[in-house]
Structures are given as C-alpha cells and as structure tokens.
Image (cartoon, rainbow, N blue to C red; front, side, top):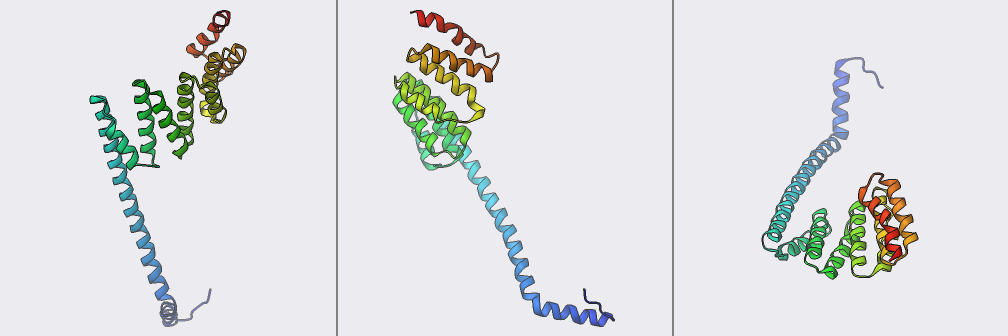
Amino acid sequence: MEQFATEEQQVEAIKKFMKDNGAAIVIGAVLGLGGLWGWRYYSDTQRVAKEEASAAYQAAVQAIEADGNTEKLDNFIAQTENTGYATIGGLVAAQQAVNAGDLDLAKMRLSEVQSTTADPHLATMAGIRLARVQIELGEVSDALNTLSALNDNAFAAKISEVKGDAYVAQEKFDDARLAYSQALEKAAGNVLLEMKLDNLPALASN
C-alpha cells in the first residue's frame, strides 16, 4: 500500500480517489440498498400472497366440509396453479372424489398433481394414491406401471405394500408375498402389513 508522508497528502489522495471512483461507489451503494429494498419488497409480497392463498385454501376446504360443494376448491386450484397450495388442493379434491365414489375424477386429480407438482415427495404420494384408485377401477397393470415409476426411498414401504395389493388383485400371490415382505423389511411391526401377509394362504386357497 502506498505510504503518505503527511496528513495533507493522505487527504489529497482520498480526494483524488473519490474523484476517480466516487460515482461508482455511490451507484454501488444505491444498487446495494435498492437490492435490499427490492428483496424486502419481494419477501413481503410473497408472504402476503402465501397468506392470501392459505386463507383461500381454508375457505375452500370449509366449503366442502359444510355442504360438499367443490366449486370453491376447483377455483382455488385454478388460481394457484403450479404452487404448493394447488398441489394440496388437488390431493384434497381427489380424496373428496374418492369419498363421493367418483374414482375417475379422483384418478384425473391425482394424475394432475403428480405431473405438475415440483415437490418429489408430494408427487410420490399422489402416485401411490393414484395406484390405489387404479386398482379399485380394475386397472391393475396401470397401477403397477405407476408404482414402478416411483423411486422415493421415503415411501419405499408404502410403494411395496400397494404393489402387493395389486398382485393380490391379479391373484399373483407369490409376487404379493414378496412385495409385502419387502414392505415389512422397511416398516417392521406394521400390523396391517403382517395381516395382509398372513392372509395370503387363505386367499390363495379360495
């Protein structure tokens, strides 16, 4: 670093530096503060949007619980397309369709969620539920294809379990036994799985 003999030389050096670089420093400071303000504005906007979406979601769900009217939920899903709230709304709509016995609508809802959500865990959850609906519709081969495309380790036990259910529907009991056993390896102590596995000999003998 350059050394200055006197205070006057230091002052003159600072003045020269500011003359040569002052504009850039001021612009940089303004941009920095502007970026900070812009980030805060963006964050506040995002927070408000999330709060509004949350309120709309609650209203839609309450409307369904009150009178079974799904119109508000349909509107909510359309308005929040490609967001986490739309994904949750789609899962709720699918469950409502199952409860109403409209399995074709449930299949459509779950397919939409699986293909549009950016969250891999929610996509897997939708895929598992889709496979269950496909089994109920008798589309067992489609269900197995749906499950085979899932590779989320967090849901490995559930994927294997539903595969077992699909094989039972096809009366492929050896394949079902293997699938249930694999599920139990990942979910030891699951009473329902143990019951399904123990019930296979009775199913096979019918």
